[in-house]
Length: 266
Length: 285
Image (cartoon, helix red, strand yellow):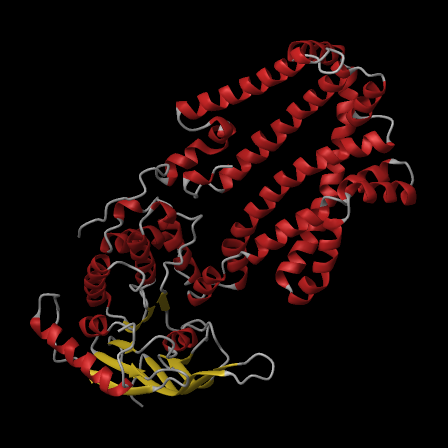
């Protein structure tokens, strides 16, 4: 057997139970996907298509689903010694406001089992990467939204994850900040090379970031309907690159033909 | 790599600086801030004293004695020392009532915050408890338990308990589940989540409920003493009221007010501010 895929999802379905006699809401229907080690994959789909539900399953927060989901061959939610390190970046920074930026990162390091002697160097390194080295001892509420999200990205890379799950991490930021963070994300990713599964409803973002785009249909019963390979787009990519822009136009065209109409979000 | 401008310039500086201020700095919490804020507070206190003097000037001294006279009597009482035994008795009752009310409120508040069934069941109790006039509760307890210390402590504690329960219940319900999910996603163990993610969110709730509860309890204890005890500050106030000695009534009330303000604002307020030092400065209480 070849080395297992970084992320392997096989025919995963998820239905949220309805209240009383009303039928449940089927969020995902028989979704199947694989992400290879070191690959950057975006899931692109309209709001409410079950993208976030899938990430919740992969991060082990939701264990009520049908089908099979594994990370590097370990079933999702497996917390045994030797199970792969998985980091998450959420839509909101989700920093603990009573801890400084440094202490927030140290929380993730401690939870992932890093010895205390390594905390300082690891934290300093990732804070440097996101440009927050001068803000290590600030509390999250003293920082702007973009800086908070950078801190949460630093937290994710601090544990040197094998797999990084990102749930629309830039959607709450203004476009200029989001652009800068996307560029930073790609730089850090090429240093660490984790496998990334990145959920977004922004076609340009998906094109700019990923090796491969997986498209999801609208809910209920969201499933994968198309796949676009972007390995042809050379890295490092820039916003000025005409090829990136043209590719994103093609992605939007494919999205419209697949999903039928332009969604408000796209 | 360019940095975004620090938008929050009005927040107090980095953690090291605010931690260094610690409790010592927080003691002056209520008078903190810019010089103009302190000036406003001084003006506020002076105007209160002015209103008091004005009322004393308009009405006969037997009805409202002026601040100077009351403070002079307060001073002689404090020097004579007899007043301290009444203060001690009232403080003991406050401490016992407070512990009783807080323990019950914490048990019920946690139960209601954590369990839907408990929430539905005790919801009615809490609403009834709040609606019941405290005078009725106090009289019922004096009649059933008797005119003794136990009854006094219970009578002061029970009317306050449902209010504190609501406070704690709300605090538990407000615990941020997104942070708990974050901790789980980073594989934090159950014990680490309780200690480092949930407890820091609940501790401030307990402190602010304590502060609020103390403010309610001490007024309730004075009331209970007035109705059914023969010692304590509340009794003394009632005693001098019967003698129509308003100067003594006000002197006793003022002394107690100062002691309780000290406990409430300076001690608990400082603790609260210490726990909330991560908060932006505008949320000072």
